Length: 193
Image (tube, rainbow, N blue to C red; front, side, top):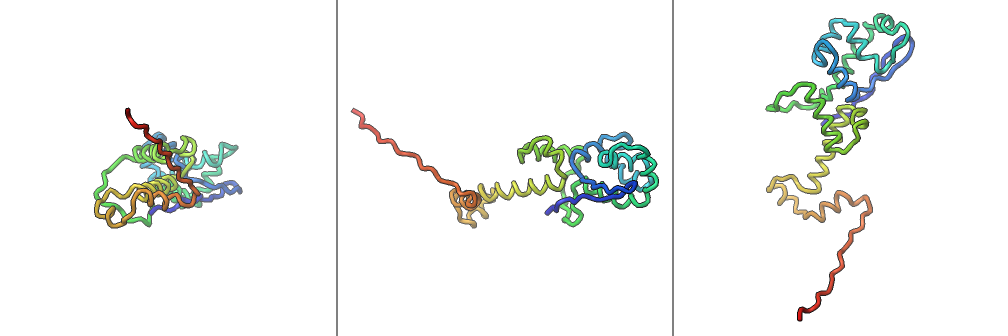
């Protein structure tokens, strides 16, 4: 199970900045020249000032001597920025890896997260882009759990084992919302002459 991504705080030129790993920023870094996202961790390890600035600029803004401040703090920034880049992937380091999954590009992975947010979850594009990859995956897992609770798992053995009909499942899923069940009125049939 995924866990929520936390903002990572860094200090730059005497100011503390919270870096929130949003899907918008991950997509932005994916489209950066020179290798996109896959080369970003490598660029950080190699001490690329451009990579450091690309990551920090949306969070800190362009200000006077920005590049110089980043250059002066590179040693202190390497670890938190590496953690931040990993948080942008949405990968939970504590989760067990699932074997047998197909390999997709990082861009396709990010676009799939966007599709999940706007499609499956029904979020607006802005809400989806402002969410972290971990938040999107957690919300998606919650949606799947809700659908399984309401409609069953699709596994005939499990469906028989739970012994609940659709009405009971709906009551269990939505019982806290104080729903009222409407019963249709039966029309009297007139005898055909």
